[in-house]
Length: 360
Image 1 (cartoon, rainbow, N blue to C red):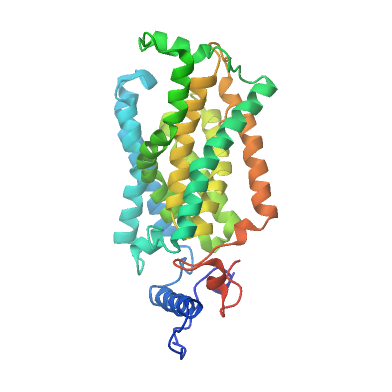
Image 2: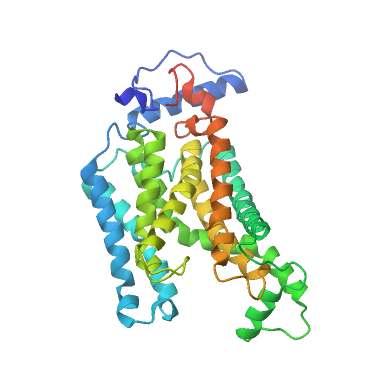
């Protein structure tokens, strides 16, 4: 397909003759035109074509480093019980960032690195903050709904009365606090979830700068859907070093990797939409952090003492999660949300004003 089908940035840098702004509306028009011209000067919003050597370089570095940092865990033979597992997994989350910086510095250097990666500009600040808030609040709700649906299907046993799972987990860890009721601990877990989301987002940044920051824009010339799906596949396969240890699904075979990949494809559409809808990587970072924090919090707090051997299928990671995610993706598709892809620094209406269609 031609570059015109994918490039959201106008190609003409001719500066129109503008009268001196006299009101708020005029000032906004001048600001928007200045941003449009800046976007032209700094290159297209997305690369004009896919650089497969750069993509291959990114995949090899991110996946290769992921295996490298988990190698000590594999060699120890202790698997998920290795005391260093969480440390190596945190390091693994930053391998896509390393790959992204290698690509933008040495393989395919863009005109403006922060702009390509979605780090800046934050303008329109209202849009960026709105979608960050949507991710911050919405993703935990989605994870909670998936768990409730899993409970309704009998895939996971939940306990909203005596919170037996949380009580047993605290007793096993020796964390019971005399005089503090289990209900109060539940309240503390829920109230402190925002803090957990913020903390988790620091780790999630390491992944998102690679997946949605670099890889998605560089595959975007393929079209919205092909780019979203391919990023999801690569993201899922990248998890292989820990999935094959039994992480998430308790399987140490390729079926576990396939299940993780399918989940990443679905979730990648949601995270990718946040990235493309805002021209910013920050909402996707918050969404990823919220997912990691909320999934753990909900499962620890509300599962029964014996949630079931395959309880994971009753969470956002499993069957009920797939149903919720597919429904959400269907809503985004039917409402045309995936076609709304503004230019950096501009509102959606400003992105298309005077330039023809601004979405594919």
